[in-house]
Length: 622
Image 1: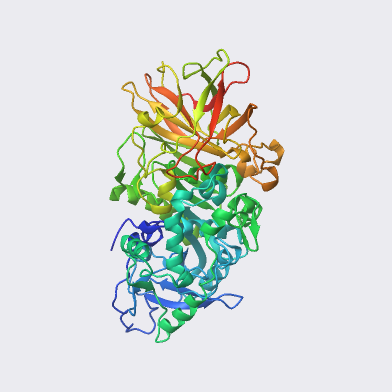
Image 2: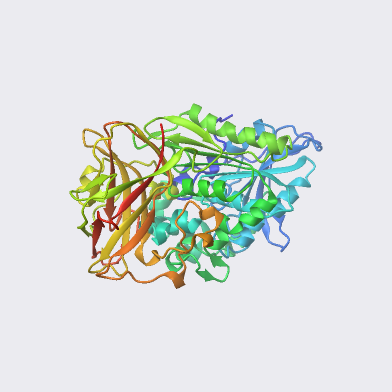
């Protein structure tokens, strides 16, 4: 049996690396069962939804199970084919399923409607119709002769999104959820953080979806680009797994013909500039947990989740979940990439997690499901966040966020590129958009779409191209934990009307190395700040901001404006002798669209005086 694959395996991540990480099912047909009283170990079949759409479902039952066994079940709903086989072949086994079976669970994985071998059309990514299918699927599971009537839903990335969204369905048989590396709010936490499109990262993902769905007849052999993408992902020559029986291949072909008109997240990303965009069933809010908090709380499903500090905005989403939902929760934020396959720590070289580290993460999910799905415990209302601190290598647990003892420490930008506790004389520095100064190929916005490692090189050379402000060496250790903010005094100059700003928090060691810690960005047209009472609970850690079309206005030129930019949350220890640095940029060409598109814009960043720029850090006494 393969160990250490729970929460990884076939569910890891959404782009090319996701495909290469999928467990390729064995090509031998499942042996015939000798004892008719024993439930088959693997069945691949269609389950019909209330509206008549048939979903392709693989059901893995522990070997030797008999009717009446009353087993708990794990349910996964998959966007990227529940299983893949060589064309014309049938499948055999899955490491993920075998691990759960060894622990006494039935493992059920389904192709979402409109994907894989399922019928239907995907009318919206993370759309209400596709997510709603988890309810009837759980009901079908509960009615099976081997079921104890309780289902735990889980998944990584897209599968984590659907698992969490399923907690809003109510009146079904979902007893617990463990969404891993999921996007609480796809608009703010992944695709358009700060209203800025992660444009350079989306093109391969768009092509992958076209291949998977057969959009426009796209296959691995359509072009040199598709051949390369399929080769990288191990997709060449493979198809979704058909259901059992002689009609399986024909049924799959009929189902896939219905996928040609699938909605595509990348098209939404480009056209849906504002968070209130809607095109029929497609919108940003349909896939946002934040828009369903009442229903999630009403359902009362206990949730375990984990995310990486440097995995896009997933940590921000976990904290929004914790502060915005009253559900029983066990939340983990650690030094991981997307899917928690790599160590992602700015102070350590990137490396793959060890088997022992994977086993620890996996066992948390198993223990959680044992409690609620196997044993049927009722949610106890306990809510906690376990978090790791960079540069200290320490895990802590809190039942409150911000953590007790947190105070805001303002650091003020000053003359001579300084950062300090006191405001000096007023002045301003010039900032020009530099289309070459980015965050590199392996940054936090890449890993969510590829599952690659997260690795930031020494930022000193890039900082020299930008506008940096640095403290004197710290006299004592300073621990920062939480959501910082940057308030900039900005005067727009040429090209700034449709511009953007990026800010980076860094640690500078005595030898001059600058280590990336976290960042924030904002499309300046989205700068409007709403009333605090208009900010929903899930956004209480974020600046009140709607990102709505009616609130967007061009940035004025020649007149100073106060621009507030939220930093992605982080926990880090600045050691005595190190320095804190804030770097300001007008572009990040490696991960974000250029605003303006021609890459020409300049600004003045004001410092000192009564209205100078300031970095607010959540400091906790070490």
